[in-house]
Length: 508
Image (cartoon, rainbow, N blue to C red; front, side, top):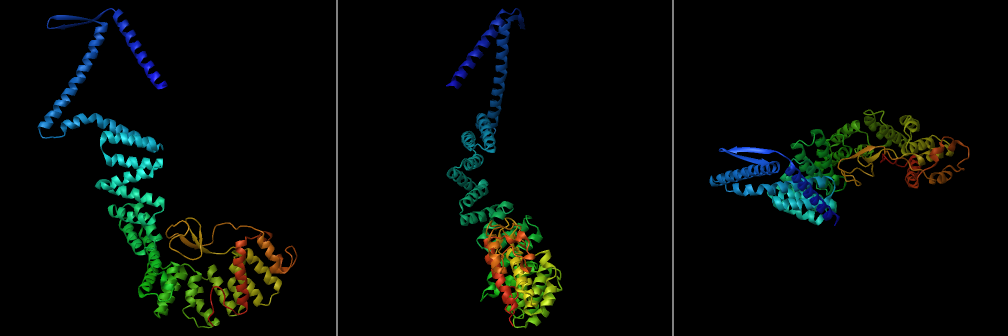
């Protein structure tokens, strides 16, 4: 209503201005004299303005007629679309303007307006390869997934826009959680555009999540060939995939092919701890102890790890505790100052009941980087040397509140895993697990303070050797930690009594 009134007022104002201008020109003296073929024509001011306007219109009309004649001439010379293009110029101008307005609306987040502009552009241009893409993206922005899917399907039917349509439907299926269909669409999209890095990464992630290790290795090779992945990263990830394909090697009845895959994974990435452990077990299954020892030594030199120590112990399962200490000296010389080396040697000396040597092997670890494992071993050493129960219980109380030590942690989301896996179970990222101490802060609670008197046999505030070494801040701990640490405390007591230690089992 107001808009109609405004338009009427503007029209009346324009008419009034023109009438006022015509009145002024009528009252103005003088004019223009034109001589044509000896005849003089005298025009007043108003007539002069009208004549000038007619002249401008005539020139414009002449150019239009000339353009039409040129189009007709091209048509007569064989250009069958020359005349139709002449009449379509105005429609194209309106269509491209609508398309431009639709793109600006899409960039501004106005989905509904962008859809309307796309429909207008399609009306004038009849170019579905342009307008369908705008319609699909605008519909997604507006939340109309059905209309977006219809637009993407129309794009799939066009050969020149097939990749865009397949990729759009793939992303829709991903958002809906239909990963199986999304993986099939990603394979088709990669076949259409092998160098598209986003599709490569999406397909690799979906294949790894679906445990399609063979397909994932092919995709990884495609990334290498197209230059979207450095060769060193390719070797590492190819080793991860080969290792994942051979995970059944840890089970009884592993096939020769799985053993070969484990060995291949270690060859591709010798510093990959799970691959080295599996390759060593594959060699042991073939009675190739030297090869197993060589693999484990190389991996231990790069990254000492409890899994490697377990595999190294399986090389000679029937040796005595003293023989095992002597044989493990080969590993300790490769990384003598590493924390894992110190912990492993301390455990072996405890099993061999050589407690002074176990203390020397542990060194300053309980002061420099105390964790539950190191403090539990220190309690076992004290008990083996005949220390009082108060001192032993003091170490166990510290172990109750200590950090857990290195674990498999996702570099992407910091999620902690009980064992190594190629794909993070939390964020589904591929090859992001590393062996390190978690960065998550310790959660404080009252459970540790409540359990402490049961361990030390005295009130928490009582003086004595069991509480003197315990900082006040370590008397609080989460309830979740209590059960886990209590298991290690029980294990430490068994270790001192000659029972197997938690990390390196004695098969004596």
